[in-house]
Length: 117
Length: 113
Image (cartoon, rainbow over all chains, first blue to last red; front, side):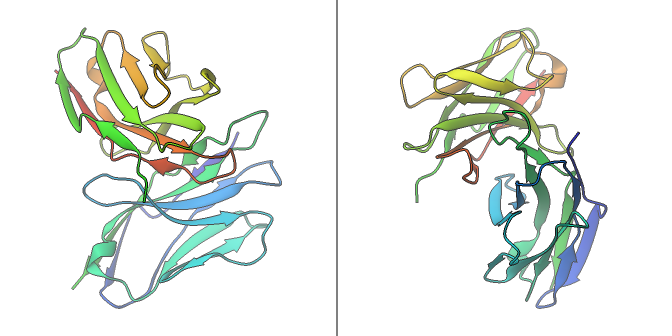
């Protein structure tokens, strides 16, 4: 079975500081995708960043970057220069690739991030 | 930028009633999904739809649920006889290819009383 685990239910960070959110996963697939989604209080699901498992280079999107450790099955999200608008729930997700799946996402339970002024 | 559009944003219904949640995926997308999120819990996959048929469904998606793409633009989720535990946020999502990232709509909050 494929699983995604986020071990930090809540985190807080001071504005302009850096914070890292943890995610581990389990899959028997060799090729898959990993995602971080942001869910602000409006409850919209917003794609933050995507990592393809066959790519060694860590993905970056402006202030957001990942540390992808394939052997350890770890996929952490680093937010630099945190802004008040980064306050949200962050979900790590694995794109299933097993047995004919059409690439449905498996989500972790989420980490609630609060950015404090 | 094109968006996935969901209507209504909030639906209140009585237990036992039928409800239809509507979605307009991004126009050139080929893969369509419904997810749900019970308040305070993680997002769960319900069903995926491709080439006018269900490609996969979860254990949650029982006989009370159905999906339809009636006219080539809308993608609907029907719950035939709602239960209290169906109260959740329902997200529609779509993507252009199987290896593309999912684009989510803003969700429909369903409240069953």
